[in-house]
Image 1 (cartoon, helix red, strand yellow):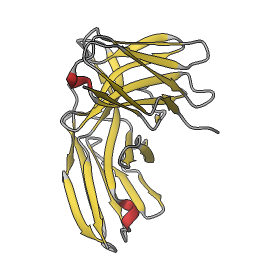
Image 2 (image 1 turned 90 degrees about the horizontal axis):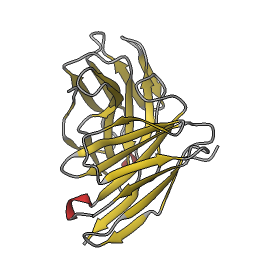
Image 3 (image 1 turned 90 degrees about the vertical axis):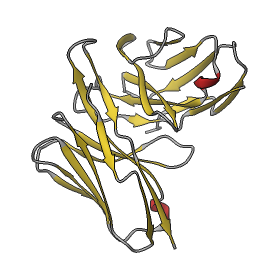
Length: 115
Length: 116
């Protein structure tokens, strides 16, 4: 079974631009969660989608948004980029919504650098 | 909100040594997960624990679900250079209120360095 894939792996943008990151979950998984990882803040939950509906949202500004498609693939969008948005963005998939006992499997991440 | 505290923050050990790290919370968890993250990669699931008192092994790794359900431990025996990385504990959090979310929350991580 193929793992979670994320594209692109690396991205460089400038302040004020917007960016879209993509995540394809493990086949059959309907839950996709997004995390931001920075050296200072660690792994922080952004949001979770299950069956095309946003189920949970973390404490991030409205510039961070996402969506999930009927094939469970998910995209995350960040508008009006700020320097502090530089981070590793991780996507994780599971067959059940998080909060249950099912485990999450992570993709390799997209490294976003904002200049 | 719920938080997971890991200790130690970092460890520098010699190849062949055993390693112990733990994860504690002020609230109860029903599941404990241990992940390892290599530089520039996403975390990889090592061990999942579902029952208080449970002891589970995966090769040289052994993890335990604390009987109070507020802690978990991970041990690595006979460490090797490829054990280098950051180890995270995680558990599903259910916060009521204010935002009625349940999500996976992660510990602060233990960075492991192994010297030959």
